[in-house]
Amino acid sequence: MADIVLKVLEIRIVLPGNQPILLLLHQQSQRLLRLWIGPSEGTAIGLAQQGIDTPRPTTHQLLVDALRQAGDPLQAVRISKVDEEVFYAELILTSGTTVDSRASDAVASALFADVPVYATDTVLDAAGIDLTEGDIAAELNIEQPEIEPEITEESVDEFREFLKDLNPEDFLTPEETAKEEQADTSSAHEDDDDNGDNDGNDAEDTEK
Image 1 (cartoon, helix red, strand yellow):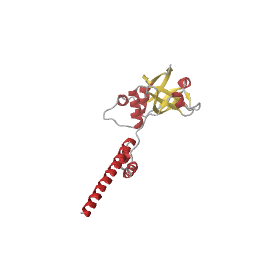
Image 2 (cartoon, one colour; image 1 turned 180 degrees about the vertical axis):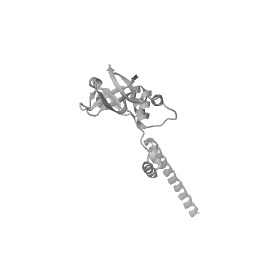
Image 3 (tube, one colour; image 1 turned 135 degrees about the vertical axis):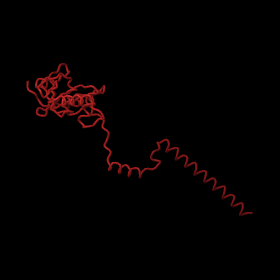
Image 4 (tube, rainbow, N blue to C red; image 1 turned 60 degrees about the vertical axis):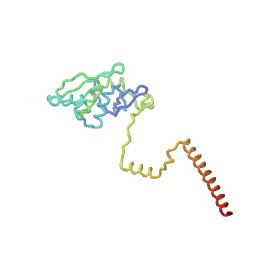
């Protein structure tokens, strides 16, 4: 069985149920492996992909560091078997020793150690999804996780300019706007009545 190098793409969310799924790609054949993973493994993989430093080592970081300190660092990981959409993997140490592992833990460790992720050709043949056949995202019912927009100095300046053009009335609902207009109309009528009374009094004073 030949080893095939996979690229770790990303984690997406499958609906319904918000189930994390890890996508791995064999670039030459354009075939995709999808691994159902748990939230904690998904978080670890996300931290490793983004290069986020944590105050204390995560479990996978600890494993990678322990193997390195022991003189037998992680060399690669291999997804070696799939059975009814359950993937099995192994850690490959520099000495040639292999250690049984869950596929998600193996991928997370590989990312922290910056080593390759392999799959056997048998696994790819059995579970690989051809990206050239239709819309994979639609077929898998996959949704991209929401990502908060990046706040830049330019976007802040644009927001400030936007605020300059706002009036308090812009925040009123249609019902509140109608009430404001009605109140203004009533106030205008009251002013007209008061002016009328004053004009009448002035006339009486003049006649006297």
